[in-house]
Length: 389
Ligand SMILES: *Cc1c(COP(=O)(O)O)cnc(C)c1O
Image (cartoon, rainbow, N blue to C red; front, side, top):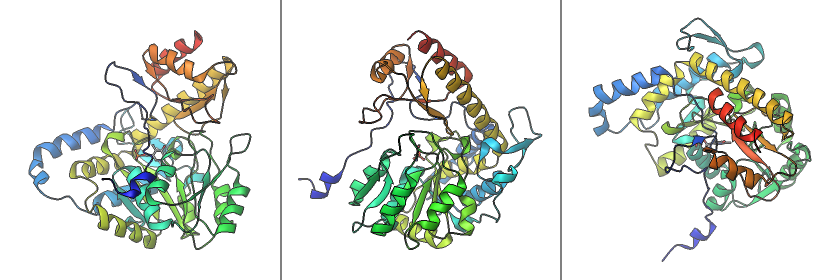
């Protein structure tokens, strides 16, 4: 009864979302803070004033949202936790923003450089469809976002996973030599998941320079706002670079399902062709409105990202004092293990105390827990549980 292609499907298993108990959720790298008050106001107004709009199709190309994203990137340099904020209310809402000197983008990001989709997972799927072929392997680290192999199965794209080095960093040389040998594309998350480690923009620049020029090079910046360096400035040099980003982590909007690509207009057009061949209207009217509102309050999100980054650093410090090994994180999560402690048992103990963290049983990382950074109160509760282990 089922098509033979179904045998290539290996669905992604997301962090559990149980409903039986009011858990503190530190297992899906969501943001502990709500979206900007501007978003709730806009959604309430949209629901009331524009309910009739729900009878009509939304803008298929999210043009207003693209313009708002371009504005946000130009204003912040694409890294919130170093964005300087001035004025506005205490929450940061309405504050003036400017990028730190090192994050400033040396050109104006324009709306034709943006593609918007229904979460970056959908955006990634279209990127895989548009740019990766079944005639050569896609080069990626062995441990990175685990949705990439899922799409590779879906689109029948062979993979060349390159093991991380002993210190959990990417093996740039091996990834490059494999990509050169096979004339292949490269994809990874930067900062990477689940390690939390980031390459500098200069390191990525050197990689793109050495990688095949006629193949797309994809950098997934889902976590960049918490401490990485964005590769958006490199678009001035490389038209084979595709940067994927999301509203789900630093823009407190996982429920809105918004993700986007920043790339040269030519590549954006190819992704748009995939969209128009599959799902013409990927972003509903309300999410477009919510996303536009979010982009107008960079100050609020910069304050949230800074709070998360500070909490992450103090939590990492705490874990180390408790004898844990913690990989230095540039993200909103930490990846940590403790010698002699079974991570699976620790996960269960923490769950019994009402807190969900993530444990992967994948060989090679099965000793680690991935812990999302929540609010100060949530982390204080978790610290009490860990102290007793
Ligand atoms: C969370 C995450 C995504 C998915 O984000 P959505 O926009 O919610 O689909 C993509 N890439 C990485 C590396 C992530 O961690």
